[in-house]
Length: 283
Image (cartoon, rainbow, N blue to C red; front, side, top):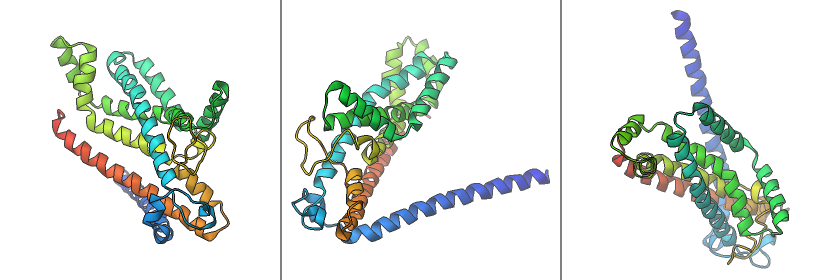
């Protein structure tokens, strides 16, 4: 009995140490980004597109990258949600008794989730060449969609798993069809978790650089059509940090601060929306 208590205390302290290390690392990264980025972050920088001497430390901003990142993340998240929600519902309502099929699909999605984003970028680039497309906003949206679809499906799936199965049996007993159960009961019950899944996918989409390196291209202008190239904040940070000019490098940290603030604002908004809809779920 004494041995079990010692073992429990050991693993409890080990988990606490790992938690504190992760928090400390996160705080360190945020402090470094804010310390180096805030002095260079101005309203002109986030409200203007790059001018002629921007990459030499002169006037201009990153508005093209901010809007381009939103275009890519919003477009890909919408497509991934349209594709992912029916798949997750099908797994938890139509395949609920086919355990082997469910295990295989979940394993396949987990494998796709773990594939490095540069592999999706290479696949998207090969697909562009096959279809005769140029680097563009559309190509970037397609590539990011492929990247975040497994995340969307598995995130919603994990939420639907915890929905009380008694709801499914009761609905069948009352004569409801599977489609009615899916869209009138399960979605409402899992809505807070679905919002979190959308947030997780959006955050991955807006913060990824490798997958759009060859597909979205880069431009100093704001795209006005799906066939035009677009800039993104991760690529803007990468290109600015690669510059030998100190002023441009400091702007890279300011771009990182901007990206961090955007993701933080979206996270807070999603949490508020989730807490609002939790009141309407069955406990």
